Amino acid sequence: MKKIINFFRLFLPIIIGGIVGIIIKNYIDYSLIEKPPLSPPKLAFPIAWSILYLLIGISYYIYRKNNYDKKTIQIYYIGLILNALWSIIFFVLKLRLLSIIWIIALIIITIILFINYKKQNKTSAYLLIPYIIWLTYATYINIGVYILN
Image 1 (spheres, rainbow, N blue to C red):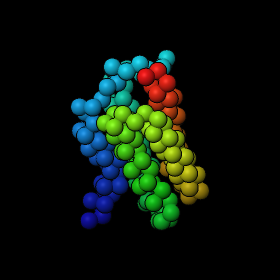
Image 2: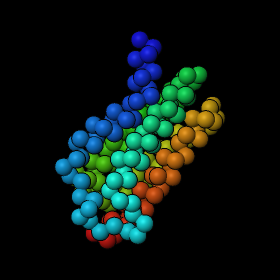
Image 3: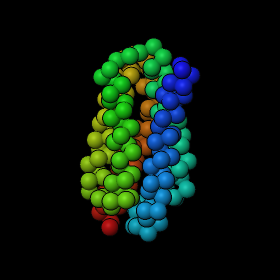
Image 4: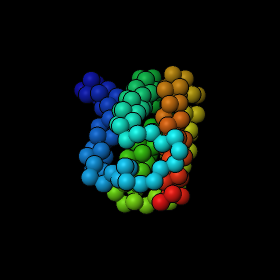
């Protein structure tokens, strides 16, 4: 049973990302919309998100090996939900302004998670840094798409 729980902790972000990818697959209009300068090619997104989801899962797995702070665990799951829903808001619903607000909320919750992790497990916190950087970059793209379209 412990192996199943550890598998779940490690790969949940990848599983959720895969499910969301299937949901939004037919709605992605990235090649049709105007994008701001320095926007990556469409191919970069599945590669980047696969790596980021793995880092998020590893970060949580390491954290949970020795920690059980309910508040931090709740923040982690709230962040996963915010992350999953952003793609639906942006691509399926095409609510670009709401998606800006949503991704800013996601950045805030991820920074709070980073701070909580850092108090108890620095490795878990540092594994979130690429995710925070990517979310900041994605916010720039999101704002640019909103303004240009």
